[in-house]
Length: 182
Image 1 (tube, rainbow, N blue to C red):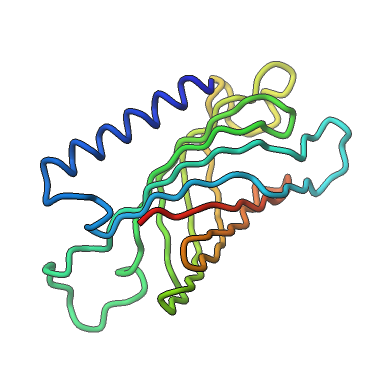
Image 2 (image 1 turned 60 degrees about the horizontal axis):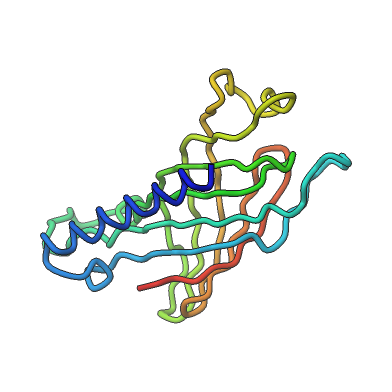
C-alpha cells in the first residue's frame, strides 16, 4: 500500500507542477500551502491489547489559496466565505497494526490568525482502505475493503510548525505534528 500512496503523492505533485507552469507561476506564491505531518501521540478510548498506539503516519495535505480577491463577494458575507479547501492523503498503521490509507478532501476555517499564529478547525471526508481480515468489520461500511470516513481536526500553527488533534470516531484521538511549506 505504501508504494501506491507514494505513487499518488508523485502524481499529485506532478499535477501541481504542471498547473503552476501553465498558470501564473509558483503555487506557493499564489497562496497555497503544503502540510507534511507525522503522528506524535495516539490514545484509544478503550483498553484493548490489540490496539496499536503508534500509527507511523505520513500525511501530505494541500490547502488551496484563498478565493481570488478579484471575485466579487456581497457585503456582509459570513464565515463560510473564509473556508479554504484542501486535499490530502495519509499512510499509517491502523489500530490493528495494518498499513492503511486515507485519501480525502475537505475544508479548513482559520478562526484565529495573528500572522505568526493560526488556530483552525478542519473537516475532511474521504475513503479509508486497509482494515482487512478479522478486522474488516471494525469500521462501518467496509464491505468492499474501502470505507467512507469523516474526520474533524483542530489545529494550531506557529510560524510553520503545525500541531493538530484528530478525534477518530468513538475509537480514540491522535495528535500530529508537521511543517507547512508556503
